[in-house]
Image (cartoon, rainbow, N blue to C red):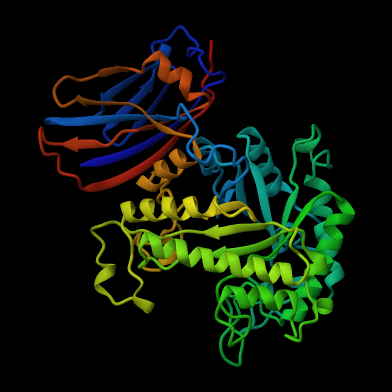
Length: 498
């Protein structure tokens, strides 16, 4: 049996010992059949809470790597998209932020839904964004919000089959007002309590994937944008004006363009970028979106059936071609952000590869996800025009009641839906320079009761503010039977230093 436990330990200062409390333990968490106790001076106690027969604890301590990787110097290059802190249960919000921070990534992509913040015109509920900004600041992260989804009161319809959230508002000025309010609140030195000292949000995304359009004559629910390109350009204008009125120095990004259609007929990302600049295709950018974004935002998902050389060529073609489009329309000075990119993975025991996939796309296992990710990022950092890349996503999602989902998009996370890390989580952290395996030990807990593991002092010193403890329970002496039974994530809070 394996029970995977992820524990994030917050230490106030690197190199300090844990504060003595006069008790034999600081914190104890019972997870299924194991009690894990954080003790004094870097000790961890492991204690069975039920009977074990020749079963082991494999304790891994993960922390910041001693040296930055080959990507040193790419400050602010790395981020994670799909961080949903606003809408998570409160007990999961800090776990999510800590998992991101422990990797060393800087940016987190997050939805700031217009319809949830301004449910009634002129009445704003800032509780969700406030909490997200508070946590992001606490963990040294920078939010990149997507400002999307029309409130019902601002939409021209609320009837099926149209999804009112994805339909352009009746009056773009209503969106402009919303963007002004949210930017004014969270900009550096803005109105929110959490940004008074200069921390704040400077990068803002106007909607998401506006070129992912319904196919066929009648629009269907589930699309981010149900409207014409021209209507989106008008929305971009409203958002750009609202953002810059609140913060003239902010960075406004278009909604990330996907490698698909605007309506029908243009099936590649390069054409989508061309249409954003030149919606009529007549070579005149006068009616395009060029004046209404500071940074070009794209989404890139390479096919999974490519060799490393083919992944490099696939990316090279797109970035080079998009750069030429930008140059042609006078935007050679603008940078590119890739706010979604990634590969999905499923457990090796999953039988999804037995079902033919479109375009011969096969599901990757966790190792394949890690390997493909490293190849892709090694190429991304070579493009001078690419300034920031956000991996989609931190966490697997769209999981149904049985705990399964066959949609590939559900499995792009670096951690599973229960927050337990995949191998790609550690690979990503190593790549960014944020984390490495610092200590590993295996302890037989079957017949010996409580076991103490002393974490070496240099591990505590190197770990800085974050430790991740991964403890699978293994059965068998020489050939443990690796079969996942349950995975659990716990966040240790309020760990003090001496």
